[in-house]
Image 1: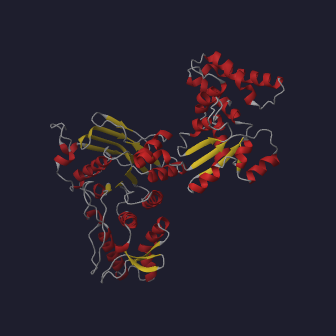
Image 2: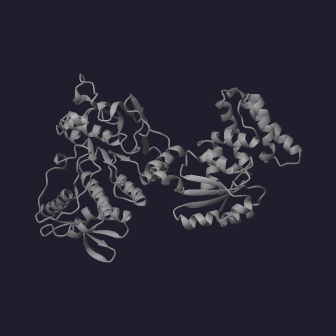
Length: 535
């Protein structure tokens, strides 16, 4: 199942909330600080299901806003529409598995088993009804794993399967997933379920390390992965909701866990997480970049849920990630380094500021700030300063912040092919055009400028101005590809032609503040520039 629209009226936090998702992503990330309605959204999912499968909780004092319309039947406060399911019949298996929820209160600190039993069907097992409920699943899932292994061993259906292979059927996939999160924690198996049975691990050099002695974070990860692995057998066409999957986990582990969870979700199911974790956000962003359309973000921050509210997927930008950092880290947010820093040409910021200070960096931020919100750019001087890292910025950052990648990029200028190859061999990226101005004054960018000011019919005139400026530059002895030399004339004549009211006080401002934001994904110049810098 994949949600197309949710509507909640007078429910918990929401006066009148509509969520619309026009596509069918695999992962939906609900973002925002504490107390802004993320858990109420999951309560809405679970309450809608409870009315269908007969396992709802008749608690109007919990489910309804105090000011909810009394004339509106409270059982109809939430409606759901799916992309791929026309109707979910009441009391059917489809209703029982439509929603599967894990609350944020997941804590099963210890358990042991002395019997083997076969729990009831997965769809008939106890479920979490509210996001405020304790959500204890490890001991139940242990019983399921041990009981199903016993059945498979003695039913006769697997007589041709070696016992070791049968055991690995249940343990192997889970072991591999845990090792990808915690490389020093290896699941051995369920031990002896008839005598103080519990999950056992190899941790470092220690064999038979019991579940009881795992850390809180290790238990949290094991709980989520074990539960989803077992439950996905039956919940195979389901909206899976996990409230705060990052609980008890450090930032680096959070991203690994999200990837493993997504890998365990069936093809027909959809994973929803409610989170304010920068680790989860960054991992989701990376998944979105590598699998376009598979991830969407719903931003709950700043919404007025006391009024009718429509929430749709957002585009990630630098402002969103700054808000996420503020939520996750508070006053420490400004101190957090980006995941990548690009050292580029241009006068660095210093005591004596000039109008050209950080020109290249300002342009790059305007071009890549929204598509790559975790990347920053620093102008550090001329090409030699970039090539040799003369200010020591790159070496200092990699020493102090091992997780940050430093990229050095220089203009092509008049370099020969062997010179370019030598730079690339030393780890320096070289632009494929002469300099950054060649990208900023690309024909597609100038056409976008005309569109942005409501003058699409003047594109030919603007391109003619560009050609005349280039010819005038050639007449001054410059090369035909030296757009830096032609830029001032292009700025002057285009400003007059289009009647630009606030084009910037000088050519540099026009290029960095007006043209750079118009260089967008999909343009040939953008894709070429992105490939030059990031590969």
